[in-house]
Amino acid sequence: MSSRTVIRGGLVITASDEIHADVLIEDGRIAALAVPGAQNWTADRTIEATGKYVIPGGVDAHTHMELPFGGTFASDTFETGTRAAAWGGTTTIVDFAVQSVGHSLREGLDAWHAKAEGNCAVDYGFHMIVSDVNQETLKEMDLLVEEGVTSFKQFMAYPGVFYSDDGQILRAMQRSAENGGLIMMHAENGIAIDVLVEQALARGETDPRYHGEVRKALLEAEATHRAIKLAQVAGAPLYVVHVSAMEAVAELARARDEGLNVFGETCPQYLFLSTDNLAEPDFEGAKYVCSTPLRPREHQAKLWQGLRTNDLQVVSTDHCPFCFVGQKELGRGDFSKIPNGLPGVENRMDLLHQAVVDGHISRRRWIEIACATPARMFGMYPKKGTIAPGADADVVIYDPHAEQIVSAETHHMNVDYSAYEGKRLTGRVETVLSRGELVITEREYTGRAGHGTYTPRSTCQYLN
Image (cartoon, rainbow, N blue to C red; front, side):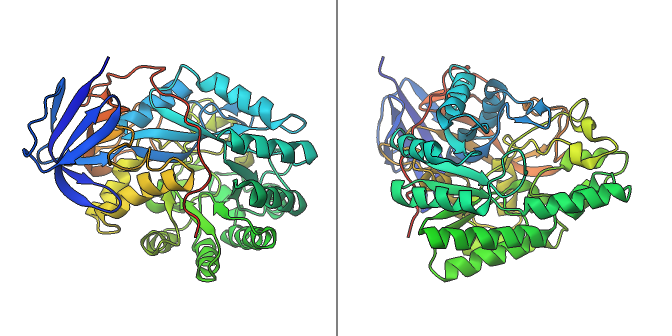
């Protein structure tokens, strides 16, 4: 069945342009853009967008649905998490399949395909967490790149769980230099952090705020520096995830000034929250425990600056929700047992629009860091991340004047609190199309589990 939709009269915003245009969608793809009213297009459906923005669906390149962590699981399934993503104007997620130590990459990838298939409201892809670097794993990396899993995450943190030592990291980077894969790095010195955790607990420092104090900014910067140098030795590009500290931004900026293919991602929690939240009384601070941790407020200005100067290229969520009741509470009396992660997949596009309103970034930069660059970084552009003929019709009608108050009472993520509870935002998603199908229609969910399809990816399109 052929179908045609026309979106009339909106301001179309991409990473490169802002134009008033009508948009024609045919069979799930953008067919044409035209001056408003200039084309007498016939359509099965017409969406009026006068006074609204027409933007590409968001690409959240860092989510963890159903992730096992600390004896429990992230509370969003692929069904609930992708539905919440759609509510927030995100139409593609890239989640992380996990290799367990002693198992193959393939086993981990197959397990994540099984979790996601038939359950997603929007399109999805996978990165691969590499926890066990050996000769077989390295060969498997080549095969995964060929079939569209083109990025591999390693951890300098979490000894005994996901941790890789420098030799394992170097071998994986050398392999990615050959096969075109992109290494994503959780850059914190986990060995040193474990010493500081042990010492803090021995002193009776058990509250959530100590999570931030032991995971020192200098240990994020040191690991970032080390990852950059290992990538330089291997001749491989590097993408550092969830950058939170100004000292780590400085390491990335220095590497980029040297012309290295080094990239950085930050997350809304580091831009809008701080150690003040971790210090909230009555164990409320546990809601804000994530790694890398929230930093003192003065780090925020350097993160915004990095986004403006392109020393940071992407804002993802690292969406990894755990309910306060029954999950975060596992760490009462011992902050090291609090599951690490925050909910955010539904809030990212709106928070970044607030940053436009507040003057931190421009409208086009909003679309660049939330849609276009993540699509390019992870091999999905221009199918995803833009509004142009031939692109998937992943389109959001966005009301820049609507006001909202963020609350767990009204959000759609499967978690019992909001990290941004009570925050007033200007701007709100009104209607969302995924490959031309209405998923959110004038603030009502009209999508379905199983509409979202798996998206194989090419190698990084963002290299110098």
